[in-house]
Amino acid sequence: MKALIRTDNLCKYYGKNSEIKALDRLNLEVYEGETFGLLGPNGAGKTTTVRILNGIIKPTSGTALVNGFDILKEEIEVKKATGLLAESPGLYEKLSAYEFLEFMGALYDVPRDILPKRIEDLLKLFGLYGRRDYLLEGYSRGMKQKLLIAAALIHDPPILFFDEPTSTLDPRAALMVKDLMKGLADKAGKTIFICSHILPIVEEVCDRIGIINKGKLIAVGTIDEIIARARTETLEEAFITLTGGMKEKELLAWREQKSASA
Image (cartoon, rainbow, N blue to C red; front, side, top):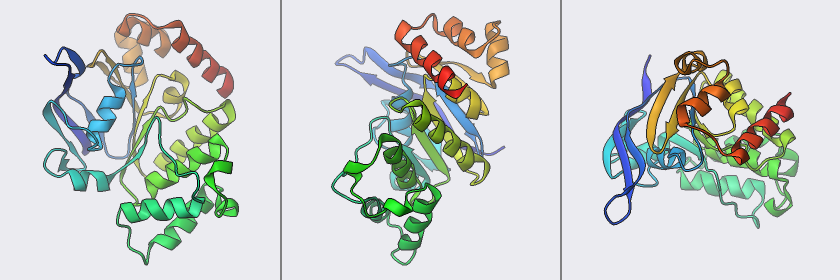
């Protein structure tokens, strides 16, 4: 299998003496066409990983290849190869859905003769075509999330990153996003990299997962392999065992997601 993402001792340190290790010697491969989930408690290094792999921040040391491009030497090519749904994305709410996608397409240099048709196709795909001229300030949270995913697809990248894609959504909107991610993997053949601490979403859509804790990758494999390694019966138990515990708030979030998807 071809690795579309390969990291090599990737590190990100903060502080005067680099005492805060947000990412500590990450070595990871994500293969073409798979949906990979990076699990970890809040502050474990998930978002840092995504930001580095999308060329938003620079690593302290180490490097990575994304779609064959070096994140340090070929930053523009890396950004063209990836689409990102950030954990806290920004929206220009005084724009319409069409105008927002038009703006994003221009940022990614989508050819002008292609862009209108692509915007139309994406709006139809995500069920937003009927409200294409409405201002985003009137959109529901679920509709905004759909539009942001459409924006991540505007330049047709082979790799998509979703950072906590359902963390701020109600159960119905979370289910919609989960189904969209499945469709992008199964029907569009995208390679998808999901960061989350919401376990049921990851269990349903991911081919393989990695668990990160305090900046270190502590386990990687299929869900069955992770469970076997931890000698537990469920992924939730394996996560708790491998990371040394979990905050009650996070546990409640998982259970709420389970109830919503039941």
